Length: 245
Image 1: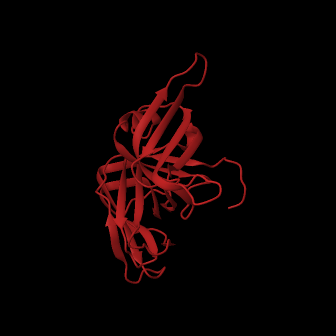
Image 2 (image 1 turned 180 degrees about the vertical axis):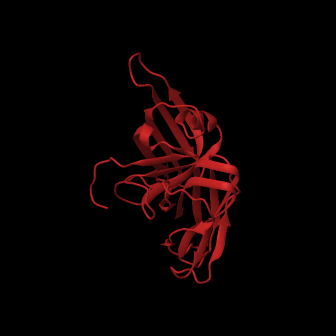
Image 3 (image 1 turned 90 degrees about the vertical axis):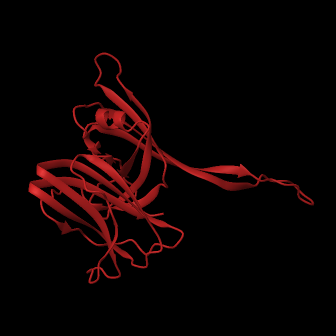
């Protein structure tokens, strides 16, 4: 990806698509440096550091809205002290687009400002999972009304010391007794001649988010999102992000 101007940034927190009410986003991974400097027989002593604990925090801000679980006030207030997935995409959210995802403990939320200004918000999420550099597995703008499968993506095999992480953001739900059960399938070929379910989310019937960790090893290197939908005239909008870390 070459240099570009931030214009088409996408931000998903739990079931909220905050894209059009968000004008600043920072994702900040960090590794503690633990000093292990010791004497040397001769010469100058240079500081020696070992990698310590890793952490991630994301900060966003924009224009305040409230009224349902797809709005920033409802999701930011509700996630304080609880875990929910964050997915950030620097340049759009088509299938295969670069995505940064992590499971977040809601850390802080600010609202309100000066008289005469557009009502602002600021929120931060502190990771209680790795920050995963992955991709979008299912796009946010495609409504699903029946069971199906998504586009295959070659992520690579998952080593024994790593895991496949998946974030599910359910943005809208319609119909009578609608239910969506999303899952991740794997195979060793793009056509999925012998698809295997790598992991499944719990059934969803309301706006919200879920996080899934699927431990390695997984020898298959192709993955796709699949879903089972039931109910009377059901319709769902949802986003799925996934990656290996």
